[in-house]
Length: 159
Length: 405
Image (cartoon, rainbow over all chains, first blue to last red; front, top):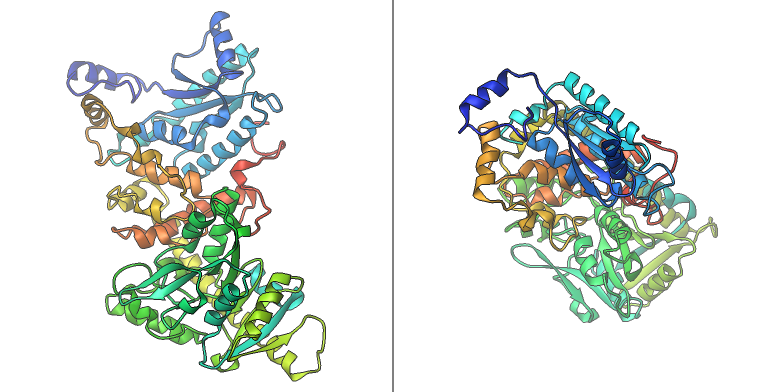
């Protein structure tokens, strides 16, 4: 069970059970309406299996993902953030995906400089027809985050 | 130091003397207004506690209490010029700007929050300034801060020792002391005051030539010109040319000393503060007052996300957030605020240090932005304020770069 869904101290029995369980990474995903969200939808309607560790937020464009949206889940203890946008040249708004790519690189630079693994933030181009690629991406990302271990910021009250 | 090194080649220079020595900048701004080249001017006026920026239209208002180049910086003037030029007016605003103010104005213009074209920039060398605060005015009591670098620094140090606002930490690690701008630059450094004030401008700048001509027509003003590529034999040319060379040399010495200081400060920051735990310690002093964003010339949003109700939650939500990690820092979102500000304006940060100057808790924000932002800027080889024509790194892209492709 991940940080964001872990129980409050009012439920000590559950908390103890959760503490004993292996760490399940939590991924917050911001998916572009036109490509990756539709791709994720296709993965679902195609009954493609992938880990249930991802919580999806639909955005109109990967270019609409403010750095704030990436930083907030990480400071709140999510293990990773996935941003999904259209392939090169396919952005519904012409260049939102390219601008998102630069913004993500900047956030990753700050995280790396502050000692948090930049691999916790993934940006991927996944089209509406690539349900399988979406499933594979979530699978690989879940495995990667499991290897990295829990986000250390999840325990810090100062974050 | 593009501005400093460019002086020798494609710029013309003038040495200007005034009857009461040290009155050149006042005369220059008066000339800008009297000639009609500028419709208004931003003039810092000395008051007992500090200096106050004013928008002046009447040249007669530029008198003894006007203090251009005072070693005191209660604002980054780019902030105020944004207000004045965001919507068009009928004429230009003359403003005497430090390098950090000019560079901020360039960035603000790119962000479409100011108009560089609406400002008649008079760049000015700066060796450091005291921040805002009552008593900063002691740094503005004598005229001028002038070319004597030792006296300039000594005055700031003395103010600091006396518990008054002294040299700001940003100034101590500033690598861009040379005045910059598209037109006239006043060289305060390295030229003895008795020789006059050195003015330089791009060789083809007609506005600058008109302004200097208007200056020369004023009473008590004596201008010695050194036009580029002509009359190398005359004594007058050697005067202005030699002054320009002396200024470059003096600036180079300042910059090389500062490079060591800057490397030390940023190295220390990276070693001691470059992790989340240390950052949390540093930000423990943050009260969430948001002064840093108001002081910042680039944090231009009328309403910051962090001032909205976005982070106002139901009481239960706070309890559950506190429950997850056992405790929750109050006020909440402090680290998120600083990291978001870094992500929003870090690439355009000109290291003016006003954020730190306005911080009631003395949080070392200048070093934080210089260290973290400086590293991120390397991704795009971006230098804030370098050129008005260079696109903002987050507003442009190349198809073949970074990942994914």
